[in-house]
Image 1 (cartoon, helix red, strand yellow):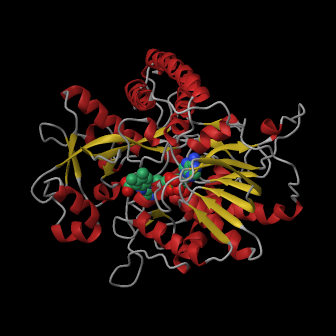
Image 2 (cartoon, protein in one colour):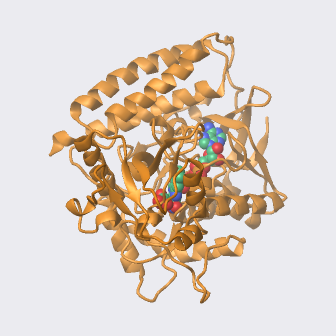
Image 3 (cartoon, helix red, strand yellow):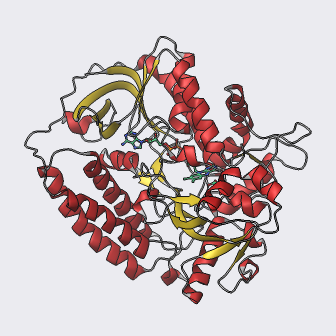
Length: 520
Ligand code: FAD
Ligand code: SIN
């Protein structure tokens, strides 16, 4: 049974920045990072716009960033968390810069700050339109230089180990986390990892929808694991749909994003008739917050019956576009669109989960020794809708806070408990792999058709009924089949979808990114 001091589930910005800090602070402690895919595959890798922070105090201020965040969150943000994230942001950004991560500068040597929807000032630090790639790549380089960190790829965390597995829970007793059962995809075995402190940094859930900007790893595993372990999960109804995903499905299961920063530089949304329409919905037009822009596009699509609207970038010079968005330019050229002569077809896509595993202001979940940060966590920063580019910032600030908690507690944790091995008997190879792939497709259709940008009571009821059937079929398969990553993922996606539907049904007022047309 592998033993470590600290177990980190996930190798995006949240998991990596936490692990680096713990490793640097405690050179004698062992840290294991597990990731189910290759080392860099994550939502982080695809982040484009950048990281929002108040780094220029000529004109910008913490008060303005706080106010913009609260406005986007539509009354549901936790003010203390918003203040902490905004005010600690510059310090966390300087740490990234000291770790070698580059951000674009102007000719005068100041940071070139981008503008995105809902921001009253230019405050987005970015590296071209591949900020996430730069962050992920450099963090992995730093991680590899650290002697006391082991990064294991193709290791799929299946379940957290708490008193439930030990069958020793007394009523009223607070649960503890002792590690995780992990599926080694190379050897096809379940390995038990025992640790004193465990961080969940497993990212988002976009793959429960048909159309998403998230890569295929984003299946809500951490949230489903935490839910099975009885941690508190909330605000799952607040799914952020990004207004402008390229209306072209690539074979790798995600839609390519056209960054909001493109609208920040002057691109205009147009309908099928080539008419601008955002002025009808919000005085901020293209730079209104994402929920407003996505609903406006959804409405235009319902009026016209079209599958997409257009983003007209022709007012931006080729030089400016290529300088700021070389990756977007190249992707458009790849599918035959010259942004100087043609408009880009775009459509909203599931992009970000504002809720997740409840944590307090220090990143502690409701289970002892289990921390969570990044997209899988619900900190209270985003409320009903996340302000653009506040996610990477939140991940950094909360990874730091989880690190602080870890150093405060780790020496007192003994973890001498004996943990049973995974109970995986009576399983056999299923010939019915097609049931897994079909159920995954069906789940995505249910969520896209009934639990999308505009919901109704009836659609939610339908989704709930159909999810119950999928749940029963999948549990039956799970009991009978040989373990496999697609089956683990499907189970987690069903739990995640169930939480989204259930929490949507409980919401009695439309707020931010949540909209049920029966509540008007
Ligand atoms: P991730 O980066 O998603 O990492 C999750 C990790 O967990 C991965 O390593 C994954 O393999 C691993 N994992 C998951 N399940 C398991 C399991 N069962 N076992 C083992 N490992 C597991 N935010 C911004 O602030 N600014 C932006 O410009 C921006 N642009 C974006 C553009 C796109 C296209 C997307 C998709 C998102 C964007 N976001 C942006 C959001 C932001 O990128 C994410 O919210 C953030 O990167 C999440 O980081 P994370 O570390 O929490 O999770
Ligand atoms: C974008 O570049 O539009 C994405 C930014 C974000 O999700 O915060």
